View (cartoon, rainbow, N blue to C red):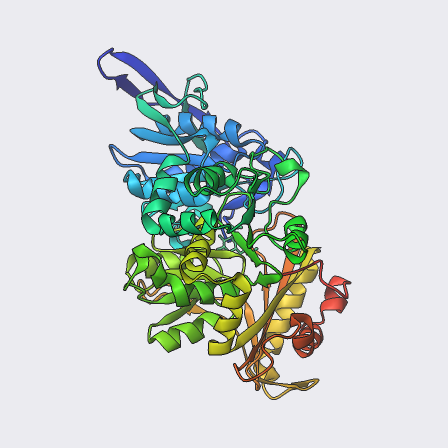
Length: 555
Ligand code: G16
């Protein structure tokens, strides 16, 4: 037990040591520890994980910690506990978003702007919220990005041997009141979660051009999905850019996201999709997810896949003031389509292929090797923060459309007419029995050495492997990052198990086929990918292992 002296008043702040025992399965997944709320509500569960983080990162004297979350059920409870634990573990300062709110990209920005040593982001992203749904905790490092595998590995090891956690006796703070309070020896600042982020967006993009387009009749709908982006979108789109009141729908963050999945895809944002395909569609429809890092872009009558969005944004990014003349490179995750590679090639800049997970972009961004990154999982972002950023992507689209005076559909067609089109889809088989999913992947990996040369329908396998990545900056190696099967015609299928689910396993099957600019660039994606879909079923025995003949979600 340690005793601290509260400066000036000579009051002793007692550090309380709480005995505990390890929990199984506290491995951070693709993006932090995600479990059912009920799991997190067990005594010591969240505390063990947070203490393990603090034990690994060892806050130095004067260190500041950012804390915020997406407002889901259990957010406030964990925040209050994390504040007391931060005080006991030697942090000098905590910055916490008002109401416990900070979108993931805003948290990344706050960490960078205020020179914090890191941050705890409380979110299970696009997963549903509420007492019977999901919760999550992620640690981000001083660059604002998710902790790399070297750090998450140490955290996991620590969770397996933890014997006690540290806290202090202190009341909950008023999370809703802006300003500074003291907790033990530590200062806690409750800050406006939106202002810093909105100011940053205003520095990056040509708000005048967008405002001009809006006043000339450009319209949009932004669906915040009752999740964290509501207040950000209201401030930026309606207040600062002048979009009509009502442009932002579902704009109030709810603890259970109104009972919906805050996942901006064609299934969970179906209302938006239907609007955009109908006669009353505005010029652009967009949505973001639970914690504000994912994005969905739909033009009037035209859905843009995240992979295409990355390519189209990269090709036009220099229109935005902050990016003029400084596109150094592009990075995409391996399962993301190669549409961005074609842009990089045309522009004479490098394109990096990383494993799934934003953390793999951190080193490339820090080293200045890339300016824009993106993933098929609806994430796009740049070197302005170290997380993917839903509203950023929407604003870049708006900036480009406003300056080029072009519709989403026209922009897409012009892009494909220049670069050709990568037809792309992801098929998800959700809540599959974990053992069955593991067997599927094991059998698939066992077949890899002999797959080349085999024919599946009209497709012949040219190469098959398990993706492994060597980070070009720190040379760390990450193996087993998904199975790739490449066909002789240049098309491919990729198999991976999700690292973000909380129920059983989710099998993701990624399908891609390239059509040159001279080919059929305006065909139905499902039809174009039929041979790859059939091959994927045959190669992996999907129906045999999962008992499903069709995916639950197609994006
Ligand atoms: C997280 C990561 C993303 C990654 C995604 C993949 O997203 O931040 O970088 O692409 O997981 O998810 P899965 O492993 O399920 O395919 P998020 O938005 O859930 O934090």
